[in-house]
Length: 404
Ligand code: SAJ
Image (cartoon, rainbow, N blue to C red; front, top):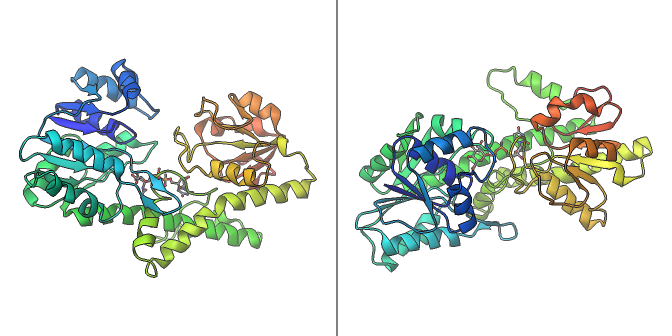
């Protein structure tokens, strides 16, 4: 039996996937209301195919509890909150989860950590717990996830995976569990390499997005079309430039590179520069809004609307979202609560002047800033005609649309 600890964005789909593929699974979360929701047959966030998978897993016998179970395999997928000031993760939840496991697990059990950790966390914070609890019989492993929100279930099944462990035997045992549903290649390595690889992957993407964002700024300075330039450049067989945008949000790409900057100051130079470029984009968009308003003689900030609050399209996750960064920045200039805001994925009240339908949002604004390319707006783009549009995602082809 596998006890999956932490039923959030990664733990829940992983637990469901295992259960739906014949593994006996108990899902544990310390939040009783989340467990109640799952027990009552409802999922806790939106993701394509999640409800169907949930039904399969329930039919296969998955159960949910706030208690830890006595079993031979644990998958720990609890949050690793990030402190933006120190640029470090706080390992307290992983430490607490692993400590609880060590207090109850049988001899020879394996604890797999899926949570994203900065390289060295397992050695620095988790390995010492084995000695502290007198549990050197317990095996540690690290199996970082790679799934992308918006396409999680496909990627859970099809992505290659990495499993780091102290011995090939432990790694192979864990591989066999993941192989119940994972059709990709499962690479076995040591824990340190697995930790580092995960961070390196997200840093690669951050640097590539930063390149696109820097090109957008260069092209803006000289009146060139960055999208056309990227489109043509990408026809080269060895060039694949990503898309500029209003910034990099989420809990991973905007966070992981800081681990390398923090641990290797003076060596991680491109990585640091990329972070700074991506972090400057929300402010760049605000400057674009300002210059468009000046150009058109628009004065009323309350007739400006931000479309999209989430960090990217078709997800309900707002962590480090560029829109929130823009609103915070405006607040510092005492005009944060003036603009109109709408996101079809955020149904609860989160910010000032938030609309709960596209109709009411469109009625309230003259200038629409497209910040997230949700399917909803792509399908309703014609309804923006007559508005001034600043499109930061290159999704609008209405004449007169301003681009990044
Ligand atoms: N973005 C751009 N331009 C692009 C691509 C993305 O501006 O061309 C922005 C997005 O709008 C978003 C941010 O970057 O704000 C990050 O989005 P994303 O879709 O690139 O990635 P995440 O954070 O949703 O998921 C990433 C993935 N990592 C990589 O692609 C290397 C995913 O596979 C990881 O599992 C996940 O981080 C994680 O949990 O680490």
